Structures are given as C-alpha cells and as structure tokens.
Amino acid sequence: MAEEGNLRELLRDKSKQPNFEWGETFATLKGGNVNVYTNGEFDIQKADLIYYRQPIKIQILNCVDPYTNVATTTEVECEFKDDIIELIIDEAVSILAGDIESTNQFSRGTQGAERNN
Image (cartoon, rainbow, N blue to C red; front, side, top):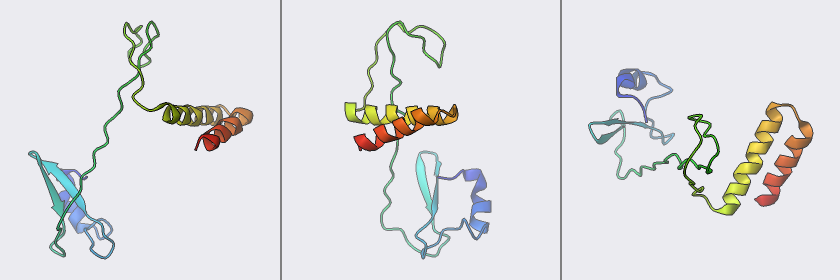
C-alpha cells in the first residue's frame, strides 16, 4: 500500500515503479477502491488483498492497563491458542532480556522459543 499523495514520486522513481519482471507493484486505497498500478507495462488478472488486524488487547481483572494506567474492571482473554501464547511469551522474554543485557535470560528465552516450535 502506498499513499495517494506519493503517486507521482513512486511512478517516477525507477526503484519503486511497478515492474513485471520483478513481480512488484503498489496500490493505493481511495474512496473505498483499491487502485493497483502497473505503469501500463502489464495487466493484472487477479489481486488478493490480505488484511491483518491488531489482536484484541487482553485485560486481567484488577490489574493496571499499561495503555491507560487505569485498573481494569473486566477480564478479556487472549484470542490466540495456548501454544502460540507460549511462543509469544518466550520471544518477549528473550527480547526484554536482550534489552537489559541479561545473557542468561536471553539464551533461556531463546531456547524456550525454539523448543516450542
């Protein structure tokens, strides 16, 4: 996806132009329509659009929501399956440990993530 306001720049820039050989192009969203650009060099028979939404934020009853700094009054469970949650937690531990330079925790979290794969 690209911004409609950058259309001229994208079509002029050789590294960003639609290219059949490389199988690359870009699209804009305007007025509820998706416009896929080809620069007149090729035709598109079919385009698949994939949308990834942000997952629902979990809430734990009586815990402070880090986004609002207010204690939550409801319980909202994670929408992912348990094995996916474990992978996410292991990766988060690895990232945090790396950020605080805790090599033992970093390697433990990395091993846990690999083990769960």
